[in-house]
Length: 232
Length: 312
Image: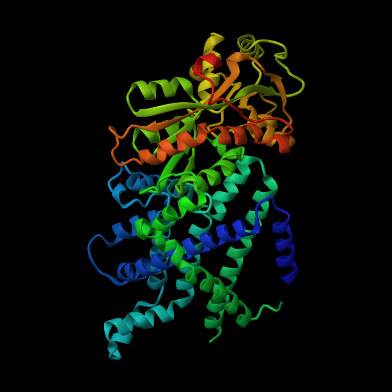
């Protein structure tokens, strides 16, 4: 593992991009995608739980919408968010277009349905008698939900990983609403597109290796947390 | 490194710490006017000439992919920012998309190379000022074997020869300046492949760099600006087959957006950019750009000339 990281560092040093710039781009990618995933978790976990446990008319319809949302094409999200945030758009006055916040908004829209859909799938796969039992033992509704979350923590962490994976790897929306502006909104995926269109395939490949390594490390950490819980 | 849980939790913790500790910079744009004011006040120290500090330092420049992919803007924008205190958001799209952004007030200033569309843009009243900045030229490139035998022909004859031989031709077809130029050349040759869509006419719908790669892989002809071709040359199996014809000039202008149409645009910033691009010192930088890397000029500065000098 150390050898691989050393190799990656060596690869990056060979590039025509200054290290400080690579660091900046990488940091922005991580910040934006981490924040978008956390916001998605805040939206997706409660809403997904409500969908899974609720018993109301139109539940199947709403689930089908959320499941479709899991397959939202990033460029469609990018286009709609861009049109909304452009100066000529309804929210143009906020001056958010071509800022990191615009990317966070778009990425949250992409990952929230993923977290939501997988959360409700995770909770629905639990034995329905567990709910009754917990309530029967005198748990309040929040306590019951907390216990269900604990019980479903493996698939819930998988939902978090899927949500993060869907945004760290996405390029269409980041390009459209961020604009790939140097020192401001350039993230790893848009930098890869730029280097490719410049014909600098070496740079593009090295940045890709960096992106994959980061994604791997984060998923590995989450997997270990997940599996640690599994052994207990 | 042993893959212990502790090590990994530590790594994750570090990544999260970095990501979240630096959340400050991500969040600052919400408070844009407040935080970016210092940039403006620093400006006078950076620029010895008496330039007033901009009140609205953000400008959006919509431009073509060629100026970004060739690396020219990476040189010019930092100079402009240091000189004036403005902060430029460069959006690199095709000339067609850039002009649309201008028409909808989504950009403050344009740097584009689509003269016919620019003239319409100005006469329709969207633009306020327009200045000639520089030119380079388009070249017709293709496989060394030259199956349609275009070498030595003029532009019209070359395009006719390609159509007659039904040799593969890679077209941008993305309303960019290059695409507009290419369609104009077909029209002059009396052929209209964009409408008839013969099998040999490939519409890539992508930027110049990607289209060159496709042309190289497919052994196709394509029309390209010289700067992008030179920047990509090492990776391409394409040769210059037609160059140096007046009909192939690739002329860049800067246009500002008329505030009468879009009061929210940053006209002061736009005019500052236009002035900067036509300044003798900037023009010198443009003229020297790329010489050390490619052994020849990529752009020829033109601010002291008129459109008529370039045959427009």
